[in-house]
Length: 226
Image 1: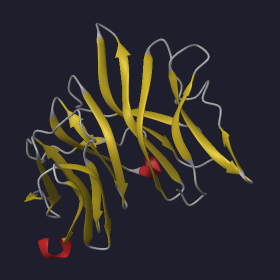
Image 2: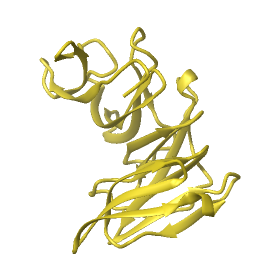
Image 3: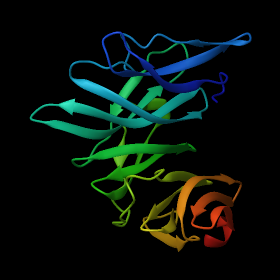
């Protein structure tokens, strides 16, 4: 959902083969797929696209995922697709300092947009300015080195005010790493299991975690971490 209305993101079989990223917009009671060919959402001979998740920030729609490039060999690099508004063109932003194998999997925005994922088996967090997306992305260098399960649901980016955080899982343990608002990070242990999704309402975090006992909801007050 953006301020310009709802949208659905996914994939669609391209005429030339493979799956392009695709977006559907409502028109009356129908959802109409927008043309991906000729846009940054489409596969090319140089880049294969792999969208994974979508989010809205004001009029801007953001799709997180990765691209596979073919240079000296196939490399998978974290990327975001940014649609500033519905009268503009899609932009592809390959994220910097993404290592050899990386993906962007979840985004959340305040004045700055934050995108979490993994890079070379560690939690990775990038930020960019949604109003001036091209060339503004940076990887958060102060984030501690934290291993992550790369074959699970993936991390979830959360925001409390202007402070970003990441809920992620590794080897049966779920953790929250949260900015302290300066250059440091606080790490909290959540219930055991694999995080499926997470969000905040005000200063309260809600995380859905799957364990051997089933699926449960973990909630905590992030205001107490200031």
